Image 1 (cartoon, rainbow, N blue to C red):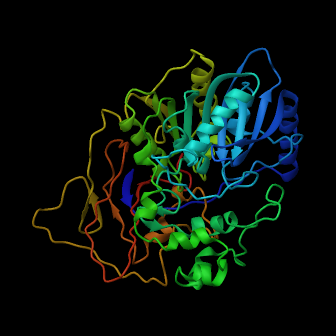
Image 2 (cartoon, one colour):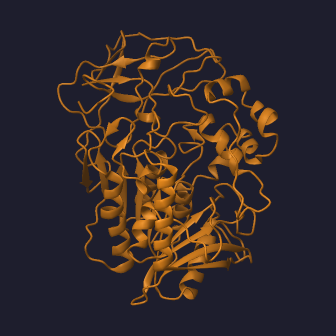
Image 3 (cartoon, rainbow, N blue to C red):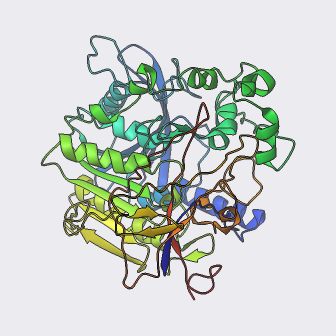
Length: 514
């Protein structure tokens, strides 16, 4: 096996499930849910009088009191109506079959909830009186639920993936006494440094354009209507955005003021006060509940978030149970599907099924139901090279050693530094009219599994530099943070550099298992 430094991307896995089969499964699950749970809908008042729409599923088994698990979301709770039951799947299905009181809530200003919506609303550490933020809304919701939902045991958990992961993370600050367990999963932590919108300041256009177009749509009946995707009128997003021209044209030509958040983002191209206020990491203090942060190694949206939320929680809350879980998943795949493969790469195990049954469920059972069949661990990590789960008492692992790879003349990558008197450099010409694509697949969005795509389609470009080691003589396992240090100069007014450390598979690349 060799290692090389270049770009990568991937194809969306094909799901061999017909619409009729999917509808039948969904109907069966919804029927089961209605048979075992009673659905209630409430509008819970916050301290400023704004009411938040909240859906509560209570087990019909009243043989004992059950704990509450909350998910707060900006993505709607359809179908609305006390007689309309949703289709529980993934983590929700696993938790439902274990008799938790399942609560989901439209956050302030979304769908059934009153008030004004603000993207990643900044945390206010100096709230007074009737002042609110997402943290206070979480506190007020927990307070109401514990006092008003029949049959609860007074213990509350929270979890959510992606944006709901952000609400989980911010909700565990200054924890409500009833909050005993929180699991922020792929949580947004900093929209400029590493999550969703920017990666180290580089703006992710294709990942966000259609998302914020849909998110900003104003519906006459938001509880029953659905947002529409942007009509690109072409399957080729690379060509679409090239023809669009400068980023400022995105609103002038297409959005036309209908997505004010988009324009707000474009007004702040640097890490200024706007973005700094939306960084949740400095505020992760006074957490008194157990925390299990979850992420995916191949999550192109929120990989920064889980690692940083775990790190900040660990640093500022010594002594609390704080676990990191990282698996071989793209965005949110641990909460749905089997996790058996990503694109053409098989992990030889149903990693998502294992996570839900043997990691997530025991975590909530232990802290909310006092189940003693649980072994706490600092980090529960899937090692992709050996296809196995590993436990560590620290992250990064204590035995890990810092290693450095150096660029050398002749496109060589090596662990030995270049000669001290070396003044070698490499250069290339970059044409803004022909940017380097990150995937070979025509797409107006981005393929979720592009981080594992074969990169050879870009390695022949003159504006891509590829450095490769000699064949490695022993296994090399990368753990902990990877950092690229570049010494560059440019004649351009703006530049982004993307660095990837990837494996070069021996033999048949299209089937790495061989």
